Length: 229
Image (cartoon, rainbow, N blue to C red; front, side, top):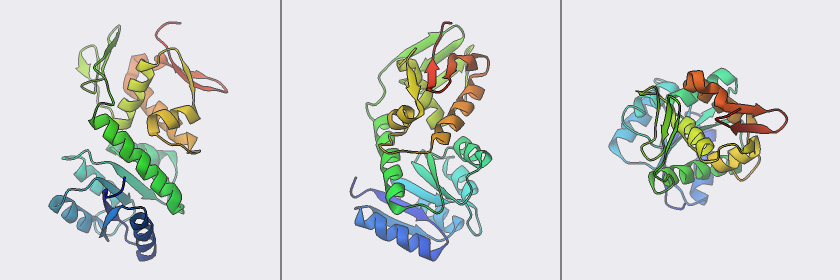
């Protein structure tokens, strides 16, 4: 993915310089921003392929930057955070963050996660989803238009929630481990954080409401999507 244009937003000079050097060695073209306001200004003046964004920033924090960017753009976004509590992950994912990595992190893992997010984004924008409509009682999942509705009412979902539900409906009645879901849905080819899967399963179940039971926990193994008992 050499040549991808990255907006790197980090106020700590040491971390920003270290990450920039590593990314440039990997072939990325990196633009730096030192705070949230600087990030928004640069984002509006140039087109980037991805944003790597710290949460704790001066002037405008990372959450606010993410919220503002998501008003007009679906640019792939990875958050850098010093906190790893479930609430923070949920909040970020609900805002539309594609992935997060907790400090301290290795540059190698950061690059691997970035490449996975970029690859996923390219597949979704291209021919990654075939035209398909899944319907079960009052639930419908239109994969080609990326819409989920219950009783005719569209349900708001984060991009990753939709990726997950579309994967499940294409692979109904099959059990997937967390590792398999990380590989197939997130695109990770290494051992990732299984809590990412559990967090998104929780979010997806909440979005599905009365149909939350379609996502079945297979204890000791993983998850399965089933429409019949």
